[in-house]
Length: 442
Image 1 (cartoon, one colour):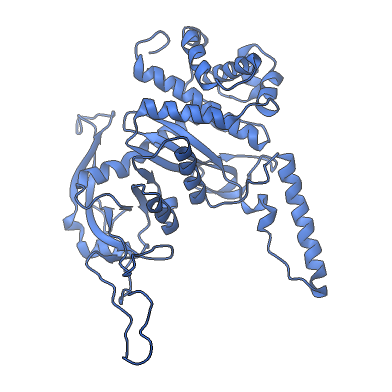
Image 2 (cartoon, rainbow, N blue to C red):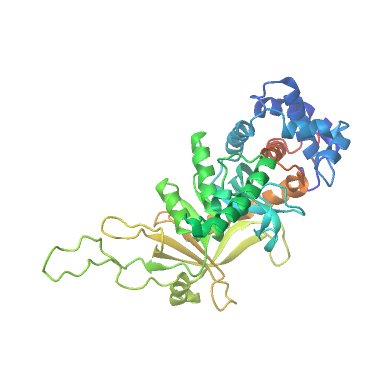
């Protein structure tokens, strides 16, 4: 099969010419001009061909064309990347038949300050704060295949003049207002040079994730389940947003999130019998313990060994490459800001999934899920662990297809590049799944 980490050589790609042209006819169906379709095919070929760098100039050299032709196609040609992304997303869902959609984000290290969204910010890719861009992505996954459905480039507050603190009116604040306006002018100039649309502003990554889910819903696609890491799952507003959309989830979270046990019940506010009775809904009388406290109370002895899938790296000690660990699951009622109960103040009941290795003194990982109460432990674990496909996707997209090689400095250019990288990955994934022995595959 294809190894996207290494790319495809010229002979292999030439053998796939007819398949690539047919594929391009579908994903570029909305292109108004023949030269746009031709450049779209060239760009896909450039992304898939062998080569360490997938920026304009080296791609142009490998393709035998002036790299400015590719640059013009990505920066000033009039084509809608959202329309291409919509077609790619539909094909991904049809191909993969996902068991879940996964939300994640990835960083792109940058040297300068001109690329849209670049700032000193935390990146999970770096594992620290660095000068980088960060993008939020939405993927359709199974254990056998995956593909990108949507992208959002995160804009930090330093890229949004509306995030500057307001200055009170009055003569005593004249200098402060002038200073704020100078800062705002600098940000507006940066945004203008990066051609960032006025409607694109600083939004939390979890909000961008929900926006992508809503955009896919507008395209006629609804997730069977949403999975995310703790950067999203620990946010009660994100979880509530999924519940408001009637979307099931299994999301990682942190040990400090508070939750009542499933048996806890709210009680009405006390009433002395005088005056008007209290109208506020009942509340829980006791403090909601942290998830870690629930786990420690249950104890390590309650954890069971679960095998959630068979991998590919076998060994004499593990001939079937079993992926396994020790887990327990409890029923809890998460509390905290953004969590809403019913009219009687009853908080919704959720699964708390806990991973607790036998050699560890305390659990290592936590998840919350709104899957039905009769969901078995193996299913919970398998879905919680399916995020491994995202690291596989990012490795293919970056190392094999040049996702992080884009050197353009416009907002639209970045999104076009990310869209075409996703389209290239889908093309190779389709070949890998449908014709594993076709010409050009190993």
